[in-house]
Amino acid sequence: MGRWLLRFASLLLSAAVIAGFAGVWAWSEFTRPGPLAADITVVIPRGSGMEAIAHRLFAAGVVADPRILAVGAKVTGQARRLKAGEFAFPAAVSPREALDILERGETVVRRVTVAEGLSSAEVVAIVEAADGLVGEIGTVPREGTLLPETYHFAFGDSRADIVARMRAGMDETVRALWEARAPDLPVDSPDEAIVLASIVEKETGVAAERPLVASVFVNRLKRGMRLQSDPTVAYGIAGGAGLDRPLTRADLKAVSAYNTYVIPGLPPGPIANPGAASISAVLQPAETDYLYFVADGSGGHAFSRTLAEHNRNVRAWRKHQREKRTQ
Image 1 (cartoon, one colour):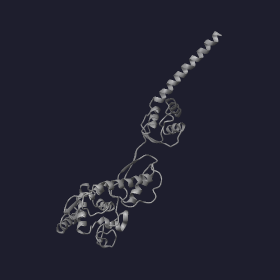
Image 2 (cartoon, rainbow, N blue to C red):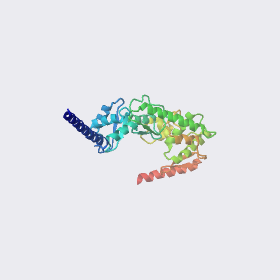
Image 3 (cartoon, one colour):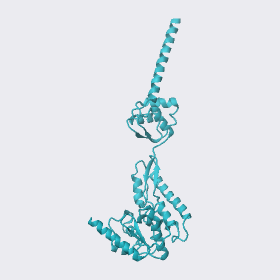
């Protein structure tokens, strides 16, 4: 009897030693650097169980053995705490580190940037082309209702939600800037401010010039002068698609609700989606007595108080254009 007990005890000891070695080996595999040769992003769908997650990471080359990951998750208690989404895994990440990444839920942050001065149709096209977003936008929003900005999102977010954030951003921005507006402005509502800001946005891409351009239009409106803005004429002809040719004299005389060479005051709506800086420029314009401006050949504009001075600036601009064509 004693001999059998010794043999049984020996077997138990051997099994324990083997189990111990197996455990040490498994823990080593769980914590050692993995096979991933370069950084990678992997999407974990909502509702994925532990086995599905392990096999997805194995298929992506993040882990060498899905069983090690699955067992490790159960041993550490992480199996029920793993998040869904798009995750970034660095090269050589260990299975344990991979689980930590999934548990923290630090999903990849994606970005979509909308530049100032785009039409709503152009903004929608950018959002529709953004990789990682899902769903349809539906009807293109009205011009001037979307705030140009960089928007962050996670894989699988809704396109419609991004557009809704743009609308909310514009509403909030206009509300705050309207409350801080200068006195005696020739715009009677936030909607009119957006219309004028869209014109300023299309007239100059130089940030420092926006308050000056705004001052010209504000001064003209106060004096009952027509705005005479070329971008409004182009919008009346081609809409938000933009005009693919220079304006002609006939264009400037054509009757259109957006031709500010013909109509008095503001056009009936915005011609683009202005940024916060252009809206601010309209509601806090520079204090000048400028009534005119024209391109100066350097990317900016020359401003003037009188028509005679403006005509000299126009002749200088035309001379610059002729010289440029002959070079």
